[in-house]
Image 1 (cartoon, each protein chain N blue to C red):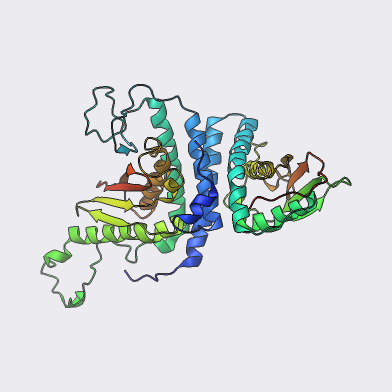
Image 2 (cartoon, each protein chain N blue to C red):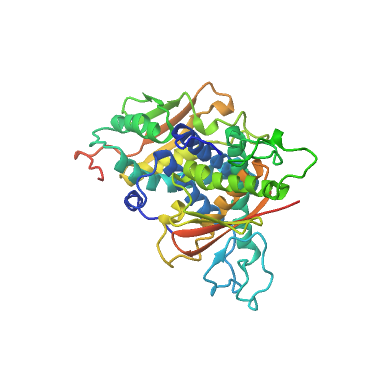
Length: 181
Length: 242
């Protein structure tokens, strides 16, 4: 069999496909196990939380982010460094309120839904990508930041964009944050 | 049971790609989450067994199970989780295969004669004479199969786990044993004999993945896995002849 030995780009594509397909299989299985959309959403969030608490260590080890001085910086890092690193996309960030603790990530492309055309029948309130909310929430909690993370808009539900809302729940302290090394 | 911190994984086997890490973490959560839905195994669990196998068939005996029994003796609940994970792996393996038509072996017909170096071209062989024994139909089928298994060990493993399988053995009669001495989904857990009983949960999905990929490549199989000492494991592929 004559095959080229180095096929890096294809391996990366397959690896990305692997994650997206596995996630799809997981959502399908959860839909089988739970009748209510809220339960599926809840479990996806919970699983995402578990992933996020561990992923943040991996992220901090790979990236060399310095100290953050504001929620806005943190959200920028999530969008421009973390999303880019793990999913290859860079959502845009908007700030939603004057006290600067509510932000939105607008996802133009979403690799998780690459193979999904529409939500399954009878699953209109399913937040297909709810794992992402849990991941962000779990990661932030590990660096001592409490936040509410939910989907504000979802293309799969007919909205024009997919929007994740992050609401930081505590005011920043006087001291600067210390990042784990 | 928590996986170890990321610091550990950066040492053993080198740093994995960021997106590979995402799959790994998702897999760990899936094992923990899907397992939680089923009741604990009762006293029927065969704890003396050093080699625990991912079952495709269950042993219905309980305390009187013979020592050489290949199936993990568990109550139905636990078995369901393993087969759920295996089923998910199967669907993913199929989908991966379908999305990568370049994976199909070069000759799509299993009966196409494959010239060996030094052979005269097929056209030179008189049609009235049978092919020489080494190009018989059975040999061709096994050569094709072996190529497919080699592909799994090299390309599939490289794409999914960023490493190749460490060894491939076969009895040339449709059974293959693929050995990975440091299986990435087990590395974070432990080394040695600790958590040996937990290991099958972390292999079920991959067994399904292998079975699904083989299915897309036109091969029906049965895949089981066994662990003697983490993080080394063996996948046994038995080709099913219809």
